Image 1 (cartoon, protein in one colour):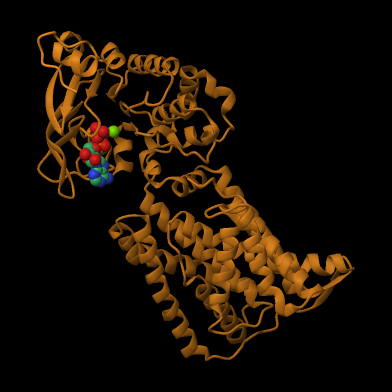
Image 2: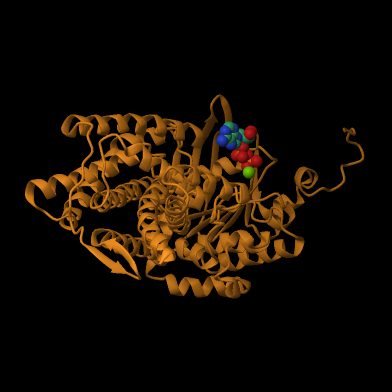
Length: 291
Length: 245
Ligand SMILES: Nc1ncnc2c1ncn2[C@@H]1O[C@H](COP(=O)(O)OP(=O)(O)O)[C@@H](O)[C@H]1O
Ligand SMILES: [Mg+2]
């Protein structure tokens, strides 16, 4: 059935968008880092999963157990020893933002360069759980279904953690007003570092899951950064629910356009949706009122 | 409980505070009066650790030097600031704001107890717990701000112009709350434009002019001081003084 032919793959794609946008919105909204190397981290995780699978025969789901802690640690070190210093040096929000953009732009080329040396420019994919199953009349590979389930479970868990726990509330408090957060005893620098690292963990999960069904190469990170940014801005910067909803929306709309109109128009559809949302609500779907 | 001396601060080249001295004894309400731009907010921010003081000063709280402590550790010592403009989390609910108030380790054990006390102090927050703070009136937001500060289990409460922009009725409610807070054993350092109401509840008063100490005394003395009456209480000038625009 056409509806499910669009809805299910759309949700799979949207789930991936939502998951990676979640990490970016946390990094940007809480730690105030506009991370331009975000997509490269995702591709690096994808290559990590590929190598573990082809080299050691380790399933991508096992690779998560390795890739995620590594990504969290690397991102934490990056924040603690590089970005935090910049944040302290920047006079105001604007200066900090420009500094973080410049530095992560540099990080982008470092990660991409390493991947190009190790893997060259060609496309890679591997076959894991690419068994077709019929769900609601639509044929879907099991790996996509697995990715969707992971994305859904993680998205819901992160949402609940951020809204229902004390630490989660503290994380949101830093996003709303960092100075006020210090006044209630939150160590904003430490919390920012942990949130940045956590965002790095989420993008690593995204990379591993996507590698199961997508063909990728060393220089396509920018596409993911761009898509994640579009979703973050569309959902409202720093807003978790916004990232989840906007991600799913984008996935379904792109799939619908590819299926019903022309696959070449998905990027146009992305930006039409993006502009449409921003024209109606300039701060994003769930964005706070402009101050 | 709080001793300050030789506290100065520069914003770039502009000196906002020059050699300020001030102390607060346990259980006191101390008011700071001064014109706009006198440096009152800067002083409170430095006590709360939001602005790092230059070396050479004395900033002691309950006997310990707190000059080097960052803001989040000063809260742990028992100093809570209700900043100018309230500094509440507008996107979050009343309940979340109050829960965040109890984030410091010193406040965790007594959280439920303190919440009950805050709601007894500001009963109208009780039915607003799930409302986003930014959608509330100025007076209610100020109650959330004070309530959040009290949730951190402070022994010294700093307030920066808590009655600013409030109706006379709500201002009175805020000042009434401050008296009750002091009765519960919390010392209060209050910066206010509303000199009359501050003099009514304060034990002692400091005057700050252009970043300098410009006098201090008991609230009773200050109320009867003609200079104070002229400058802060809006009393008519003596007939002999030359009229100025
Ligand atoms: N962030 C800042 N940068 C530069 N100058 C400032 C800053 N904050 C305050 N000032 C200046 O310092 C002086 C004292 O300000 P403030 O402490 O806010 O005074 P008050 O609270 O008594 O009105 C004023 O002249 C003000 O213009
Ligand atoms: Mg002020």
